Amino acid sequence: MTLFRLHLAQFRSWARLDIDLDRRPVAIHGPNGAGKTNILEAISMLSPGRGMRGAAPGDQARKGPEVGWQIRARIGEHEVATRALPGQPREVAIDDKVSTQIALGRLMRVIWLVPAMDRLWTDPPEARRRFLDRVTLSFAPGHAEDALGYEKAMRERNRLLKDEIRDPGWFRALEAQMAEMGAAVTRNRLEAIARITAAQDGAGTAFPSASLALLPGEGFADDPDPARIAARLAEGRPRDMAAGRTLTGPHRADLGAHWGPQAMPAALSSTGEQKALLLSLILANARALAGESVVLLLDEVAAHLDADRRAALYDEICGLGAQSLLTGTGPELFEALRDRAQFLAVERRGETSTVAMGI
Image (tube, rainbow, N blue to C red; front, side):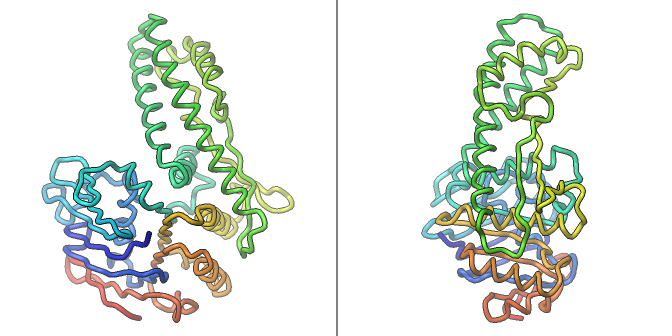
């Protein structure tokens, strides 16, 4: 299914935006602060979660949390709407019927790359877990429910630990839930890594492939067996009670990456190599989803690539067949896409962004 139409109302810098799209890549250009990224963020809200900026709904309204915002889209034959009214959580509707964010993930797979992710390999493990879970969510929309179930049970267990409750029956019940959900989370992550790895093998790409691994972090974060997870949680209760929180489990996992014949750790690679490696994983993610409805959101992706690497990236994007939207400060960054893309020029007028078709 293709994202054919996008309508924004009071979202970020857009009082209103209406654009029609097709299967061609979309090159969105304009000065910094014009509102280009806000278009990509709006599309990222057509997937589960808080979108590519991780913002609370009240922070996305153009005039502040007392206003609210709405996004409507035509995805294939479906009419999709999501909005946040003042002081309310985000709502979702598909074909005028109240729906869930998980249903959005089954309708369209949204993959994004933003400048803040350039630090992925040197950031704390939490950033790499979020990245891995977004990748995993693109393959298994139900991963969100598994992760939320695990987090909910862990919060309850942490409350018992802080209150120094010692009733083993309460702990066993919560640890059984954590074990079941945690095992599912780990299986989903391992399957996602396997699919990314398979998509890299033999791919004709100008970007380096990576050897990925789910690192255990603290203890057993890479173990998909619920019985062993439950046993280790029970064993760790005294230490966890002293700390007042759960110290081991899938919530402490990390994503490891090595590349090249010398198996260079991503964290020790140059800035340019880290960027190329990240692009490689994003492209492999899209490649692994061949046959699904995929939208790639690439924010300021050309900024740190030379002309040859930009041309190689655009060739791969066109070859993937995934719907793609890219942003940059000027149309010259997309010269190699000139005859193959739809161009949108964005500028800021006062507090409102405006858009014009064409270069």
